Amino acid sequence: GENVEQHPSTLSVQEGDSAVIKCTYSDSASNYFPWYKQELGKRPQLIIDIRSNVGEKKDQRIAVTLNKTAKHFSLHITETQPEDSAVYFCAASEEDIFGKGTRLHILP
Amino acid sequence: DAGVIQSPRHEVTEMGQEVTLRCKPISGHNSLFWYRQTMMRGLELLIYFNNNVPIDDSGMPEDRFSAKMPNASFSTLKIQPSEPRDSAVYFCASSVVSPPSYEQYFGPGTRLTVT
Image (cartoon, rainbow over all chains, first blue to last red; front, side):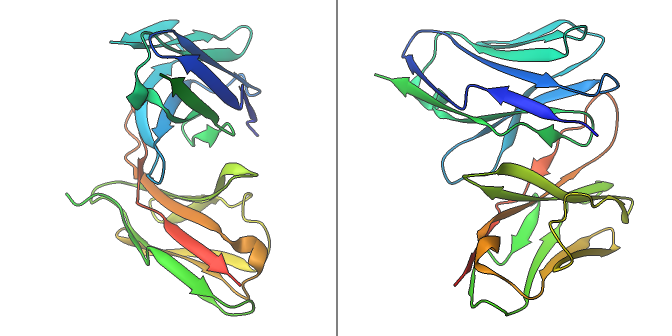
């Protein structure tokens, strides 16, 4: 089955700087890679996703890149803002096998 | 649509008691997922259903856990007997399997405390 590793587990970034979260997956057949954001005390919500026929996708300050050969994908957040503070989960496959999450802190 | 509905939102019970968590997926969604979230283990997939049929229950921790989906609008996750290590937030999520999107919509979660 699919196995997803996510790094780092915690990330602190100065407001305005960029944040990068990385994930690797094991099943080369996986072709769907979503990212979810979970604010404190709330439910996870999808923020961006990418399919394997696309190498990069961007939505305003958020971008995701995918390297199918290396089986890794990354979330990039530029010009970070306080409201970006949350836990971010990557996932792989249509059944959403989740990574363990990255707690992102935006420092004032 | 009200989104995914879970009940109860909070449950406190004593070790050994039976616990039943309930979920109503979004109307029209054909997949339903149960997750358990703890600080130590993150977000774990317990089981998922497609068209009311259990597809993968390999994440169910042990025989004390069982899940059912008698129809397209209702699912239960039961723990019998409960143990303190079952304390966690349990999320239900639903999706409509329609490429290219497989977005899952999460319910608000049930916070379970077993004393």
